[in-house]
Length: 221
Image 1 (cartoon, rainbow, N blue to C red):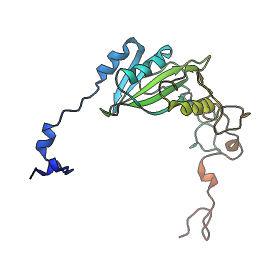
Image 2 (cartoon, one colour; image 1 turned 120 degrees about the horizontal axis):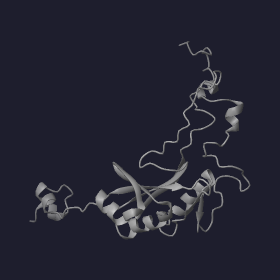
Image 3 (tube, helix red, strand yellow; image 1 turned 60 degrees about the vertical axis):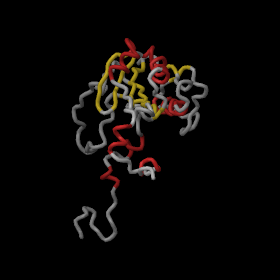
Image 4 (tube, one colour; image 1 turned 180 degrees about the vertical axis):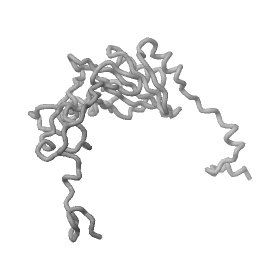
């Protein structure tokens, strides 16, 4: 009778593990070497964070897919690093606004512009993931579309265009998905005015209604 592991028993022995072919890993140096001078900066924390040149955004993503096997597309989005001119949700609306630091701090792997686009892709064999960031030009917020590199990026780019006002050159259809087609503005930009909160300010404590049978202060048991 063959041993249990040869009969398909999922509880393989230690000797089976040692006999298996070792899993190949994709190193940080290998990724950076494949991209060359397209990498502007990098940071390694759990995933590898890379910032690539704006003009090399699409070619970098293609190299990650075709040369290094990063075939799995996870997501694409953007972030506006500009501090909000309207303050923070935790501010007390009855108090004078505090002095704010308006410095733009772009996070892992740095950045030179107000907004950045970032995408996460993974290698399904090695289980290594890379988050690739790219600066979006301030004067003309446009990047090359990567929908023809990663098909899954199609609607992610549409959402990013809708919410941040970033254009993706070569995208076949950047129509809004959530907002009316004639909607003005881009709600995830930090300078987009949230009119509802101008009428009824945040934080949420002002929205809380007293529980039935309790006082407004919530001291009753």
